[in-house]
Image 1 (cartoon, each protein chain N blue to C red):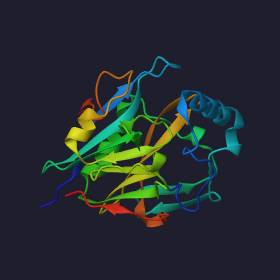
Image 2: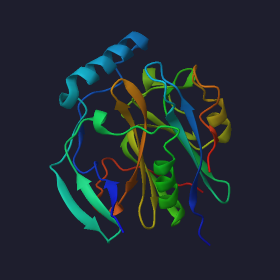
Image 3: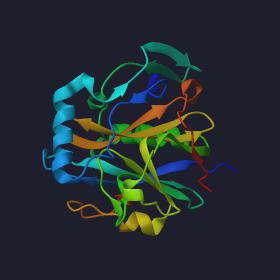
Length: 165
Length: 82
């Protein structure tokens, strides 16, 4: 049975850009173009590449790559959607955690009680493993990335959990 | 009794630069009805707005239904997926 690749790109990461200074659509497009052109120079600084097994269920990998390398999820990608659904179905959800919570809100606004802002990395954790959802880009296209996550090698930055009851 | 989380739906749209529908929101539900929608977005002074560089976790059905983006016919709650 082939190993499942898990996303462990939260080990030791530092964010180099901020979206807080983006104002309006023009800046948004400029930022997208800058990211596209900058390639590896923009995005996330990640730990050196390591590989290990996770209880025989999956392979843990961490590597250095830009956000552009994250595959975005397309609506017709039923294979990946089934993998995500299967990982969550296998065990009870224990936590929703945020790898990088929001550092500041737009113009001092505050989200309503049942809405949380996250800079990146929403983790849905079960007793066994879980799923991570991130924002990602494929060239100039933006979308969500969803991947399987093994908890055993995850170090959260400013962990924040939200009970889903 | 376990309450597994199920991927129940998604919101998708076709960005200007492509002809493929990309996913911008995912809806997860537990068997007891609890749910969370994860979407590209941020909270602004006018409410939830689409933002490709940020995420929002929405634990409120009405808020998820009310969060739309201009080129998407649906809301962040999305359509059902099986």
